[in-house]
Length: 148
Length: 484
Image (cartoon, rainbow over all chains, first blue to last red):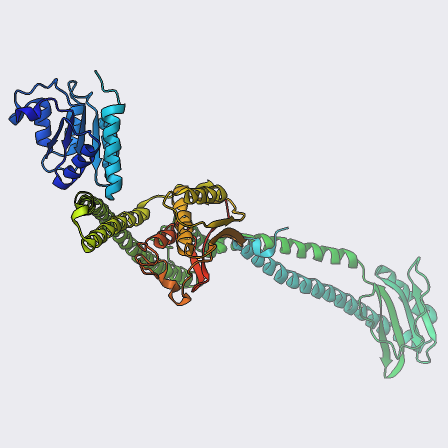
């Protein structure tokens, strides 16, 4: 456990195991999955980031380089996580990418209001999905300059 | 000048009554004047007749004794009656025996014999009277010529009296009719006022006052009955309206609710249906990538089929969502250059990397249209890519795009020389999920033309198609010609 919570660069919060697996595979194929941690719901994600609950004792200053957040999750959804992150001085600078299954979603507006850094609709076709994840990882892990 | 029918009934009634009284009194006065003039003349004539008789009786002995002088002397006594102008006594042989002429009066030539003499009447100013002198035998005739003294004065005074009576009766008639017409016009006016008030305020509950059983009374009652009916009908109408409005608002509420449910439904469909499809697609792909070498030909074919179907499922979901989304989307209309839009779409299709055909596009003149550019782009894209798709197996595929103006409409069309269709299925073309081709030959979900239909319908236009199997198809849509 300890080894897993050290040096987390990408935090993937996704309740759908299949989507998570596909996402991780896409990142791995592009050698971007080092330091990736997958959590299956929003509650765990918040506990991890703020060092609470099962992650008590973890330092909040050890920020991941990017958080990839699914919107539809049981208990604590992606929007709620985003809201908590962006309203807290200590975490609001962490880049957050929201992933959603729906093009129809009325959430896109809300997410940008809350200060999301990127909003991506998961393509249905695997090839496109694969490409989208790869380019996301490439951009946020290599091209983009994170806040100090 | 105002016409008679524009004068108020009140004035007309007064005028009629006064005119009637005037004519009646005028006739009476005329009769009175003429009657009095006749009486005056008759009196004058009979008084002269008496004088003639007296002269005749007194003259008898003078004729018998042939005493001319005595007769003349007697005639001179007529001087005392100034209205007698001339007088003569004629003997039985018709010879003048004696005569008298008033001083200053011309000698009057009397008729030769008194025999034919009649007392002269008529309206003349002078007249003759005669008397036959008989004393056992006929002795002669006395003839007097007299004038109607004071005739003009008398006529004048009678006319004056008549005019006074006329004037007095006019004044009385005016007073009486002014008082009397009130009993008619006052009620009529109150009926008119009620009518005006009802027309002005639309308040059908006011009623005309009812007094008397004459025509006005009947009219008032009928008018009130009519108001009763109108009020009743209006009440019914208002109730029906209120009920309808209530029903409409309830329906609207239900519709809004249904719409919201539909939105939530399509959101969850797009969300929840896509995830498993993505997984099927993804894991089949992984199977191919990671275990491809271990799969035999049949296993590879089966995996390929899974992939292809998952892909199609994804396409179906996306198309269906796009279709349902169109129904709720508001149109943002403006003047749009169709030419620019179509050229752009054709270029995009030409530059598509997966493109296999070499379609020639012939783009004609395309007038500007007042429409929503986002959805119209969808229409053009669907029609043109359809044309490309169904003509790709031809040796030289040609897609022709043009327009013509007819009446109030611009008709745009996309024509291809592709596979075409049988006209007996033309009404199935624009239905959702309706396809005239199998997936084997031409892939598709059957939503594209349904979207075209929905967009054009929302613009108030029409869509239709013509085709022939093996020879190609033409798709038309119309938009209103008027720009903004």
